[in-house]
Image (tube, rainbow, N blue to C red):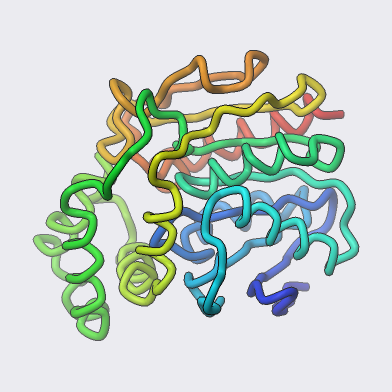
Length: 269
């Protein structure tokens, strides 16, 4: 049976039985991004989705540290509140970076890590926000109440999602609405952006933690030439590039993503 709770200031939802598997979304997103793969994963895992601070149903508290390490510590506190000592973890974009930091911080607690287009693996750390990121957030915030109606038109979905997904035509209207509303209602978006400036992932993760990194071949958000530096990933990590896939592999290639999650967690045994 699924159940909802707020633990240690993080909103979360858990469903399914089996080994615990945490899913962590990216910047300006929310736990709704995982809807498409939860039914498959929950057949084998206790799937726990998390809304990071200032995203989804989790409020942004004054003074909240939003850097990936601090966000990872918040997820560990959530696991403690559930009474979970060891677990698997999957993260997308910023969530992927958070997952990697968690494995570096407490590898004895992380059974496996799957980074889906993880941020932080860039040649040179950003010193300012990506041009256009502020505009996207402002537009999403201004139009969030109109999104359910507007996104029923293919032309609007193309405008909003063609740069994110090469398979944008196949995305459900619900997926697009969820993503648009999540962005519009994320007060943690800009604080998270500012917290990653001048940083990148540069830690060691021991080989005891099974690790897989997955990027899409058409990731326009974190392009291969600048944001997919393999030398920063754990040396033992399996590195996969999926075809016809953008910045949200769980949207574009859900079957392949689930298969790799199952394979990685099996390697952890």
